[in-house]
Image (cartoon, rainbow, N blue to C red; front, top):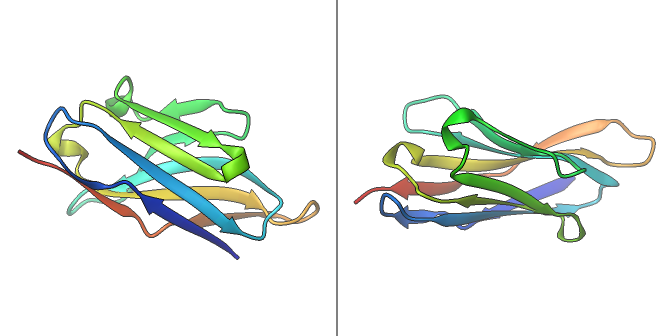
Length: 121
């Protein structure tokens, strides 16, 4: 089993910054994609950013230039640096990983519980 623990959420004023962290623990062979999603109040969860095992990144349009996803493979962690936050960025941010649990095993997906981000003056 793989556990994901997010941290770094909180209340911030518009224009402020937060850095979210997600650490994976448990038994697995390798982590492939690491992603962040968010769920705004009253809306469905949506994808925000992805970083591959090789470090390639991709973002949804409305966070480009403001958010940066990164990862530290030795720490089995991914981070989301969020700058110039806007009220519409408010939501629960969840971490997602796709792992191979053994050298010959299949791919398995895991989700974290999420961390609340509130952008308000």
